[in-house]
Length: 114
Image 1 (cartoon, rainbow, N blue to C red):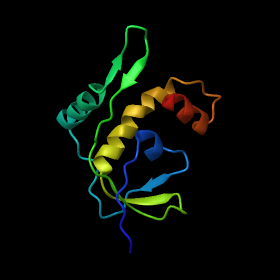
Image 2 (cartoon, one colour):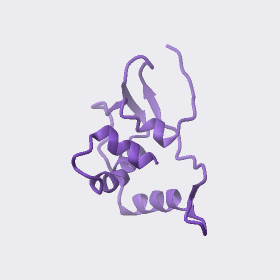
Image 3 (cartoon, rainbow, N blue to C red):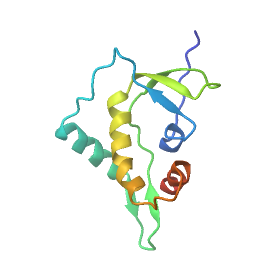
Image 4 (tube, rainbow, N blue to C red):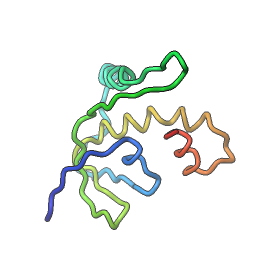
């Protein structure tokens, strides 16, 4: 088995071509309000809006996410980082709901990335 460590952006992680599977041995989602608020604050502190209304974001390390899978297969087992991935997904849901319902899921994801 070959192990690789790679830096990925949130856009790459949430590519519509990827599917993450939480194995049965993983614990259930257990973050409480305190952890979610702290994570939200950490993420949003990296985003600012300039005087000319341009959104600027700084890179932010959310921690290691360990996945098992092959690049040739879009499915990955989550070994570590499930709480962070799940929380990031929860953060994105309101953005998706605000987009027109006639848009496909992949079109909505493209809008979020812009």
